[in-house]
Amino acid sequence: MDISELTRVIVAAKWATYVGDGRKAEPSRVGSHDLTWQDDDWSYRDSYFGGTDFLGQEAVWFRGDPVWAVN
Image (cartoon, rainbow, N blue to C red; front, side, top):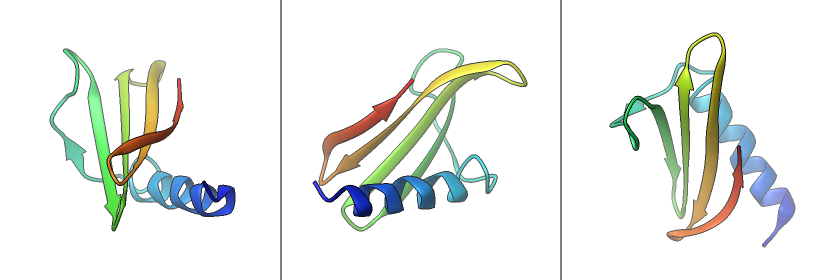
C-alpha cells in the first residue's frame, strides 16, 4: 500500500464528505448518519452517531478490500 496515495484518498474523501457537506448514504447501522465517496478503485464511508457531540468510524476500501479505518 502506497501511504502517500492512501493519505491523498483520505484527505480527498474528507473534503468531499464531512467537510464538504457530501452525499448522504443509507444508514449502515440503526441511528447512524453515513456519508460516502468513491474515486475509481477507492471508496470511503464516514458513519457516525449524534450531532455536535458525536462518535463514529471512517473506513477506506481499495478494490473492495478494507485498507484503513479509524474510530
